[in-house]
Length: 126
Image (spheres, rainbow, N blue to C red):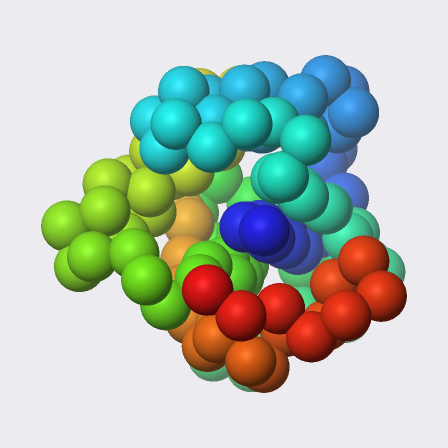
């Protein structure tokens, strides 16, 4: 059920986003023990000039500033230690495979509660 959503500006040097998504899925699966079929990873490209930091806009994803924005959604049964490990695993994987400095990532983790997730045609409880 983990969702990992990434947003960035387009890269000036082309990246194989499909391959990066596959690698992040594999790395997250290895770090968490969660089977790949339960992990969803997306990447949305923001339009050039549609992302401001301190009022400054950019057309391309810079090496610093304008961090990649990552939103993770995890079930709330994960411990604080597991969540920390999962965030670090995503940061390491994304930095390595997308060739982005690890200090230019912003990752926010939200927790989904039992009974507040609808999946495969039903309300899910854990």
